[in-house]
Image (cartoon, rainbow, N blue to C red; front, side, top):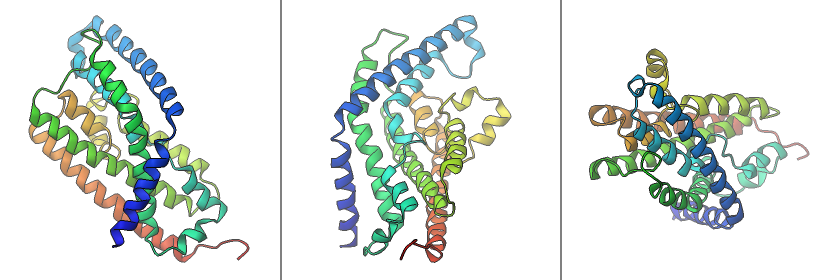
Length: 269
């Protein structure tokens, strides 16, 4: 019975998110333009010396298109404005009156919002990218087990991304303004998850450190599994880290929220 409440929140946010078709079309065109720019740049780099790079050109192209297709699922800057407004305006008091766990409600809404955005954008990008000329197109995974492994890491990555977003919301409850906190954490997360440059392109020592952080447990793992850069025991280790960081982020975020709610003050009442 308790679960039905959160399923309702999930469905409501999904239905709401699916209504923004014009925004989805604008996002698709932007992501195609950005994807082509990145791929053209990689082609120029690889022509100089293809052996100097840690990933093959096709693997890098696959990484880029998968990244563009699922950008809304993993982008650290995809935040729920309604939740931030609740915290800063004091209307969180209404949510506290509901017979629900506030953390679970926010988590459900945030995850649903990400899924609804991806549902409108991913398929067109993947289909068109697969039909492009060789060298610029998206190719299928090497085998079926790799594809299923990709799906598993996608689910874990999405859960980790949402948990990280919830951590930002919770930390905002401890500050008067979330601007500085968000700017710092979101910039750090976008860089360390491979959102700017894939982690294999980092210097070896820095890459090993980044791969152990919670940021790498989001988009880095599924993108590299799809492109074939992570496989075998490395994939098993990466999945283990995803599960570990999911538990840490959810437990830490929930604990911080409980502490914050003990000291919350609603101005005027």
